[in-house]
Length: 226
Image (cartoon, rainbow, N blue to C red; front, side, top):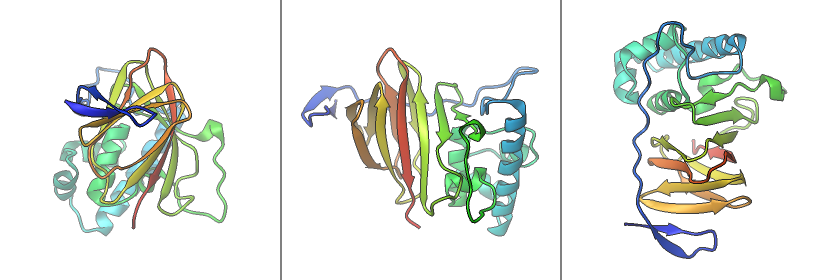
């Protein structure tokens, strides 16, 4: 049994839920990649940027595809397909690659930095989990603030999303905008309602859960220590 903390701070009993990250689904003929990004043009643009950033950062570190596969847990074949723009990765795969390279998530999806960068709502490219139940939309241009990233998360009703450990000393702040959140960290579950927030160490496996019957929305701030 794991202890669960209510918004009032009183621990209650709940079952510990250790959820394995969903396996990457196989794709049938003609099926669109589940990293789905609004439209085909947006998907192609994101795929190009990820391919270029991945190749540049891998080579600058002197890593072969086999080296990165071992460091990230993403297969050599999958890495090769991403670098050659033959497939678009899911948000979970991107997190694995970022951790394996020791870079920020935004380093893989962003363009080069400029003096000022505007991100229009319609231009923000949504990433989805492998099962399509979690959506992540950037709320700031990639690389806008050193070591800090900001996202809006949407989690479908009665859904969970397991996230593997991020880079060492990475932390997250979650703010519940609507609906509910049950966050699992170190076998402890924290129940949050709209308006609640939580800060936690994200350099360990953690699971987002929406226990309610309606979609939930959150703001997610990711802070890197480097």
